[in-house]
Image 1 (tube, rainbow, N blue to C red):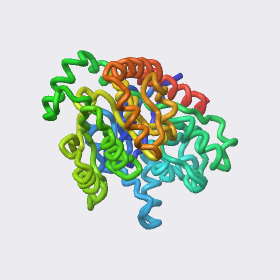
Image 2: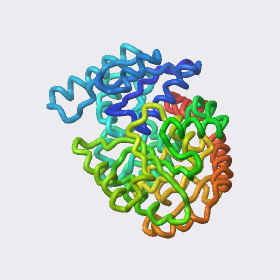
Image 3: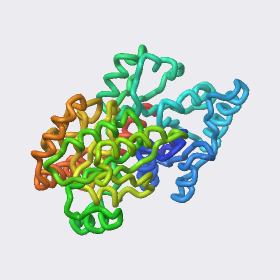
Length: 373
């Protein structure tokens, strides 16, 4: 098969899990001899500068579907023009939010359409797919099952596949010398070296269950623990973040809770912890347990959504129910540091087997090949 020109479409208002997954795809594609990637994203997106730094072809496209009819039409015609300019074989929308921008593409250019489904799916999914995709890529079986239940044209799409997110070779390669790295990272964050250290990383928002995590940890009376919380509240008022800080003080655990803010580089976060805590109330997949696994760290997670597919209970982590916070605390009190280390080793093996970028790109290329043929 010839080298495929693939246009990746991303709103990417900030760098989150979806964007990190796309970055890995783009970097792996540039190394391959099978895919020539071109990124289309808004000029203000941090992905635009990232692509330039990493020598990935990129074009500024507004992708604002809330503009006037004429502006939206201009945007869609611009995409058609750019696709012809780059001779795009496949347009791959990184999330459903940017997919409607491709609505004129099949009519005006010989381009196949792919959409990545990374977010919860409900009954409005038909609206997003007024133009049918040639292939749909789901981040978990949970998302694919939700799609099957809600999308009226599900059986009309020949290529619907589940691919869990890839983890960068860089993370896998640099997760060595665990004890030395842990000491250095804890020193960097001014953490106690002897305490069992838990970590949360991601958006500071109600759906991520940060308040519940703090309450649960307050019940851990027989364990000498500390927790680091990395990420940001994306709202202007920062209400949830402020509530979390106030709640830690109210619970009397603030001395054990360290808010790090947003981390551009996450390696030291994973090096410094013994275990991730992820009490999300909803999670399409959950990229964090995979990233933690690359660093040989297990995850304690609420048993919801795609988390059940990437955490093997009592082997690579612990699955629990968020409606019983005291029970989670009791489980933590019974779990030794040696047990966390053993689960972390198993988590690393799981990631190596299931989330390598080269394997991921090979599977993605196979999907592209089917719809091109």
